[in-house]
Image 1 (cartoon, helix red, strand yellow):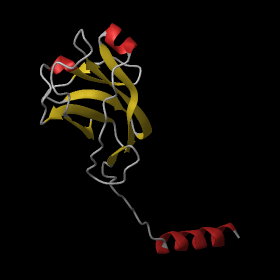
Image 2 (cartoon, one colour):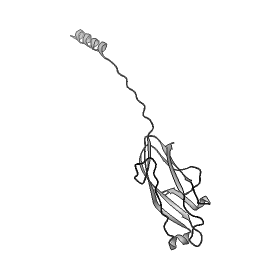
Image 3 (cartoon, one colour):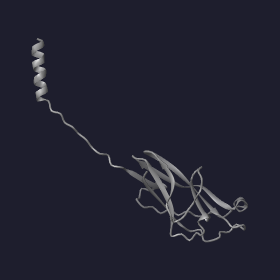
Image 4 (tube, one colour):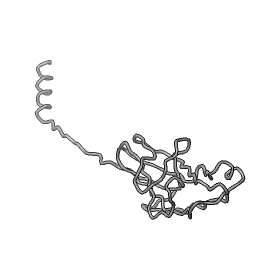
Length: 151
């Protein structure tokens, strides 16, 4: 009986087929601004009128001004910079990940936040410096650009 089983087993091995499958998962990243599903999104942020507290401390701070939604299957980083700005000097306009340290925005990309693969909601705060009388040194309009890339 053992000889028959070995013979059948040997026969089964001869007729078996090995299939090798392989695939490559390409890097995938999306960055959405304030729940938009578009590839390119423009969002207007209206600067509020300075309060007495804002004037006393010398700046307007707007927490959670923008929400970024990140989906990535690789480590990533978000860079931020100003394009078409009328804000001078660059210290007038600052940005940070909520709870982090402020970056002085300029025309050069800077890393705002980075992370590993997964899904993330990131809240962004803005700060605008005021003159001693509560006015802006210049027109505080600027186009702030956020981009995502592999880290």
